Length: 436
Image 1 (cartoon, helix red, strand yellow):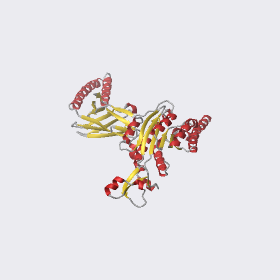
Image 2 (cartoon, one colour; image 1 turned 60 degrees about the horizontal axis):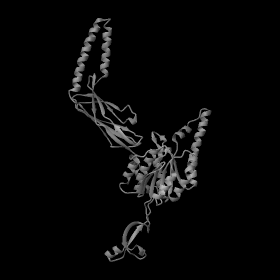
Image 3 (spheres, helix red, strand yellow; image 1 turned 180 degrees about the vertical axis):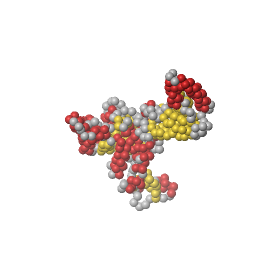
Image 4 (cartoon, one colour; image 1 turned 90 degrees about the horizontal axis):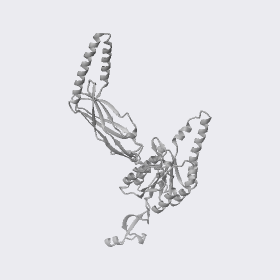
């Protein structure tokens, strides 16, 4: 129970009356009667609030949240009081959000229920803990409020942005790609992907005769194969300290994880196989490329627990382990970051080695805050000096792109917010041009 605002307003008025009563005696008597009436009204108000258990509230939300997206939370409040009441609902949200305004005030009629909806945008993966729901109820008098503690504590896991899967699903539909001029071409060949068994006709290769099927049909039958359409795509994620830089509350690692998850979904819709590699000072996670039904869930669980470290990334270890584990030529989408041309030169030999054995696409990031700073006009000598230094860093990013191109390595220099769309478009472009 707590005292309402009206109680304090009336109490201040009574104190003023009784204070003035020392000068004008009749006002002191009026103040005494007012104090008696206030005490009586408080008893009546308390009886109205406490004679029944009148409030029920519970929380409704998904068992897992999508990182970087707006996730809905519903609170259902139901009143069983036989008269209108005013309620204030305070939800104990996870402390990581650092929000103090998740409280809602509304008026409920007799035996009325209402649903409150709000959204939370997590920026870190992990387990978030909700507390209880505190509901404060006032009657029409508004002198007292009764507190109800409702609901149960709830833990919600924040996964990589799975909501983006539906947002970009249409990019992987063949009809849409046909409108862009991308066509699926099937060619009969002698590779390992089986298509059908058909009757032998003159000109068919006798090496493809299926003798068991021929014995059953009492005529020659041959196996028909088609060119393998499925390529192997690996999302290779750098977890070193270069990926700890934050943009709009999320680290570059989180943006890379969200983009790799969406790309994996599109890749499987395009009938390609997708795998996952993470590394930092050591070779860490490896998930073989596949397009089995449970592959997306497996990737989601692997990406859920990834965290950055403070060590220097070891690209030599990446090369050694990929050579052992990935034998077939694949597309490697490497998510990393370079602070300047010197940091690229330290790793260029390893990138060249990866590109000789596979098709390598290096994805690294523009500094969006730096670009915004350059767009602002300088006001003094120090400002001009800072602008020159900032433009030097931006120039080195473009120089990295040209250096990689000179060595035959594909690259993408993009801002974190456009990462998912640009990576998907680049994959679709490379696939349509048979560059994978």
